[in-house]
Length: 402
Image (tube, rainbow, N blue to C red):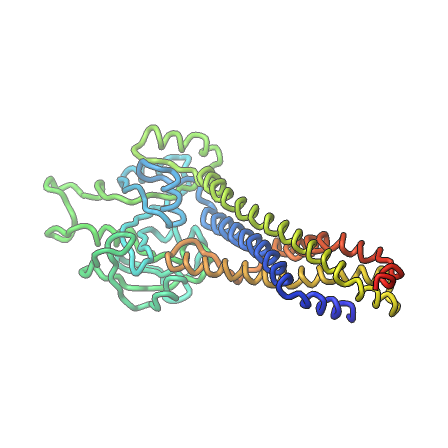
């Protein structure tokens, strides 16, 4: 303990050099911590939201856009498709389930999604308050939506046109019937309602109460949805169904596994850049610590001679230099982890304000355990040569020089 206390006092005897070394180590560790937190949470969110979804079908356009809009709800869909086309796809023997998704409106930044109760069952989400809708214009709120908006079962609100919140549909208010329990999935930030609600809001009623055309045909054939989430009956469907949808129907098929792999590859470039920056900062910090401790050995010749005269062994003198590096590693680990989590929390707050992917700075991951180890190895390697130099100090020569 006396050795650690003495090393700490020696360390702060040069405050400017110590602060510089500490800053470099902290920045490197904070960068790596941030990358670990973001990459793990984003990949975890992708896994949760994509669970059980084999195919996404929608309007012709970008497959990536379909995935981002239909699964993660962070993009604008390419357009609408005929309900009849989706129903025809659902009748295929390779298809086990089709969940229609209708987009178009929002309320205070949160998307209003028309769907069926199967959407709730797919993510195994329970209702924490109230009940699931039983009629058009009734809604169920995700946990994040209810918390942010302060809405509860029984209250009413008016949605706005467009996913950015445009002109309000004042003549078509929604009634909240329930609030979902938190699931950690995309449903937490959605307002869910029957598909019929979306049709009712955007279609003009005709005399007689039901929409019809001049020839008297039911207009259900002309109704549209935005996209649909498909689950295969057998894995063999993955080989033929996407090709059939893209070539034989007016729909576009997007395989989540393929598109998310592409997305993660693109995100991986940014992750590797940040990891590279962190590694460069750690190497720079190691060099700076080495120079500082090497200079300290030269400046402390008198102190080292005094310690040897008082009975300190060469190993103990060398340990004093290593202890200084240890202090730097410990302090930088604490500050680096704190800074990395704080940065992740700040980015998460920005994403939450945009109703985007969930990201928290309060999450602690097992992968972070090696970050203090990296700090100890970096500081220890930088202090090793100065410690060996201190170990080899000749007391007699030092006393003669004085």
